[in-house]
Length: 401
Ligand SMILES: Cc1ncc(COP(=O)(O)O)c(C=O)c1O
Image (cartoon, rainbow, N blue to C red):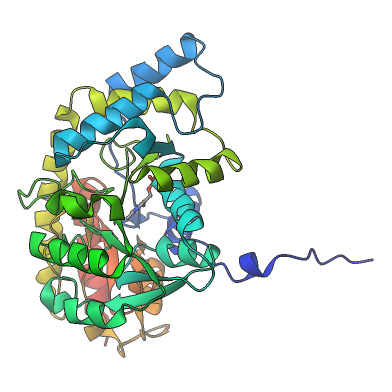
């Protein structure tokens, strides 16, 4: 008898991460020998610094290979607390911090901990691909706040005010942003804190790119600009991007003890502690020498300047200058409606497909981030690849009629 494995509605409605899918397709083509220029990756191309690796090797050799406390080892929590004080001037005690398996698990746990079915979460668009799914998996309802490239993707404050309802449970702020690279102004952050205080919702502050910033502004978030709002702010961060540690899977939450405790309960019944060895490595990353960040940041800044110049030099392409992270997010909609030998470019998906098929460029269509006019190009790769990518892009776009 044939057996069609029944699956829960929850998973039937869930779409896999489109960015990981593009990256997988690019890697598969590369393995087949196709000369792919991969501008889709959401991770630094740098290796994890040696002193961090050494801490992990030592942990293994010392036999630090057992379960730890669910919320993380004291050494890591201390290092996280020290970072929060160093960079934001915010003090967190041990029961206000939890380490998890990447920032993504932190966000998953938060949604499970704070949302009841039907609760609304405001998500500014363009957004990081996983936010809507994470909200929906917890039974929440994403409410999309459109932000415009003409304003540098700043928050539309009037739009935000008009969206708040009695079901608004949280807003997610990601600054600097994946995919736009935009960072929110201090004034806008402050304004959101006032709304959160007045209406009683959380601010989920995804600060994962906080140290990769080119505009000279020191890390800041809703809690640091308005300490009165501190207990409404759920700070999400991790070591993936700042220390080139995507594979190690350590992220953390700093926030009110009640929420931290709730997420620890969820974590204790799902994954338990994050990897013990990676915790030691993350502690070394956060408390060790910080010079490695500058080395990477300098390289990102140079690449950003180059890729933005090249994109803006192509007629029809409009690109906001990113304040941080490692993505350029140009508006490519001027090319929609144009034809090539295999068909017509109609949207970001068909443009990304055309670029992959005709020029072997891997990039992520803007629709994955909620705005179909755009394409995301990652510059977390070396200058040679970026140069080749921009040469190919210019040629491929030039062939569209
Ligand atoms: C905006 C944003 N938040 C969170 C994450 C999660 O990172 P990780 O789970 O590696 O800590 C990512 C990774 O791509 C991201 O871009």
